[in-house]
Length: 226
Image 1 (tube, rainbow, N blue to C red):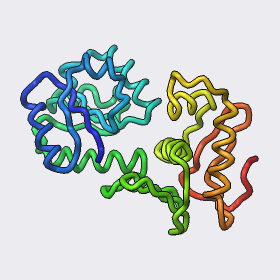
Image 2: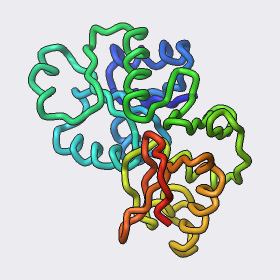
Image 3: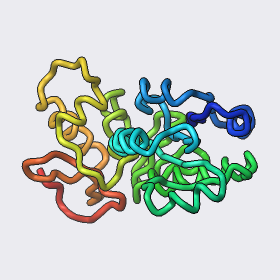
């Protein structure tokens, strides 16, 4: 189940929380201060009431969201949206007059555009599919056996397909900031993941020399980088 933070102090937007819950989402209503403290770390989507977030603060939060792969949707009155749409690099914009059903549809579309996650909680990267609800990985329909950390690392790369991450970033995102192991841990897990998913000529994970790794959105029939 996807988590949407409804970020507002206003009842007209807070009403969306219970309605989105009925649509099958986890949708807590949080204040901007709570969101800043959490840094969007436990959310898949943030629905941001632009009346509550100054432009300078919004820019700082956006950088954090982009790094974590959090979908950002701005909600505001039509006249405010008309002024800011050219300046805000968010995934979508929603009018205050929008119904909960429309907001839910926009959230689903934004998740699909950003991560390739469909309404059934699957991430699809060519022949590679991750079932997020059941912690299941398949290639060409064949189920694979993975350890928890292998799955978590692959899930993070798949949900941010096309983006390059350094070994240090992957350690922080998958193992946590308090993990004291070296960057070699990432290399070992990447090698194990490749041995399991890169079958039948598929190549999903690229090594970016002197930088790190990325997962390509579409499988390519070529040899792995390492």
